[in-house]
Amino acid sequence: MNTGDTAWVMIATALVMLMTPAVGFFYGGMVTSKNVVSVIKQSLLILGIVSIQWVLFGYSLVFGKDVGGIIGSLNFFGLAGVGYAPNPDYAGTIPHLAFMAFQATFAIITPTLIIGSFAERIRFRTLVLFVILWSTLVYDPIAHWVWGVGGWLRNLGALDFAGGTVVHISAGFAGLAAALVIGKRRDFKQGQPLASNNVPFVLLGTALLWFGWFGFNAGSALAAGALAVNAFVVTNTAAAASALTWMLLSWVEHRKPSAMATATGAVCGLVAITPASGFVGPMASIAIGIIAGVVTYVMLLLRSKKTKIDDTLDVCAAHGMGGVVGALLTGIFAEKVINSAGNNGLLFGNPTQLGIQLLSVAVTMVYAFVVTFILLKLLSPLGLRVSPEDEEAGLDVAVHGEEGYRL
Image (cartoon, rainbow, N blue to C red; front, top):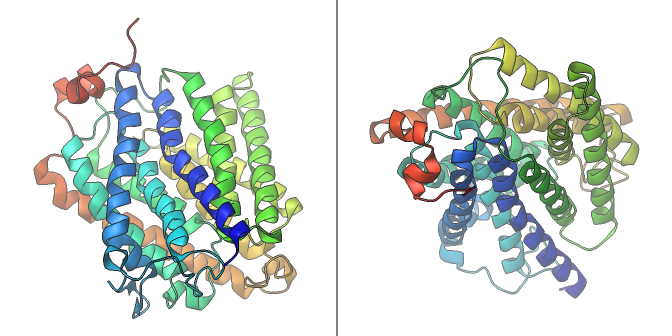
C-alpha cells in the first residue's frame, strides 16, 4: 500500500464529490428564478440517495464478482469484504475502501446530470424513485460492462478512462428519453433560449466543475504518478480549447462573445476528454476539445431550432454528444506509450480500436435510452410532473416552500 497514492485518491474523491453540488449551481443559474432552489436541492438529494444505494448494493453490482459479463454479484453487499487491504483487481496500492469511495462519486454525479433534461417540472417523489431505480438498472450494469473485471465491453477492449460512456453518454441519452416521456414545459417555445436567472451561478458552477474534474480524470489513474499528471494536463487543455471554440462560435452567431457559451463549452470539453484522458497526449487533447466544441454547439442549435424536444438544459447535446465524440476520438488518438494498459488508436496503427469504441458507444446509447424510457413509463401512474399550477408558481415555493431570492 502506498500512502501517496492513497492521499491523492482521497483528495480526488473530495474533488469529484464537489462536482455534484457544482452541477446544481451550473443548472440552477440556467433555470428561471422560481426554480433555482429546486435544482440545487435535487443535486443534494441525489448525493444522499446514491451514497446509500452504493454502500448497500450499488458497488457490489458494479465491482462484485462477475455474472456472465453483465452484472456484478452481491458478494460485496453492505461492503462486506471491502476493507483496508487493497483489491489488486482494481487498485493495488490503496485501500479497497478508498477505491469504493472514489467510485461512489461517479455513481452519484451521473443521475445528477440527468435532472437538467426535466428541470422545472419533475414531481419530487417520482424523482426519488427514479434515481434509485435508474442507478440500479442503468448506471450499475453499464459501469460493470466497461469497468468491472469480466464485464463484456471491458473484455472486448473498450477504452473509457474516466467515464465518457459510463457517465456522460448514459446520462445524456437517459436525459433525452426523460425529456420525451415527461414532455415540454408549459411555456416552452421552439428556438427560444432559456431565460437564465443567474449567470454568475453558471460561471461559479463551471469553475467548480473544472476544478473538480481534475479529480474526476487524474484521480482515475488511482495513483500519484505519471498517468495522473498526463490526465491532469490534457483535461485542462481540452476544456480550454472547447471553451474558446464555443466563445468564438457564439461571437460569430450573436456578434457578442457569450459568457454562458464559454462556460458551457468548457464543460463540453471536459466531457469529451474524460474517456480519453488516460490514453492521449496534450496535442490530441486540443483536437478533441475543438472537435467536441463544434459538435456540441451544432447539436444544441439543432435541438433548439429544428426539434420540439424540451431537453431543458441540453443534457443530451452537451453530455451525450460530448461523450460520444470523446469516446470515438479515443479510438483515433489513443497511444499505448501513454498508458500500457490501454491500446493504440487508428492514428497509431490500430483501426480495430475505433470499431470497439463505436460498439461501446452504440450499446450505451441504446441501453440508457430504452431502459430510461421504459422506467419512466412504468413510473407514470405516480405522476411524472407537477400540476400546471405548481409549475406556474415554480417548484421552489410549490414543492419546497422556500424562495431562492427575496428582493
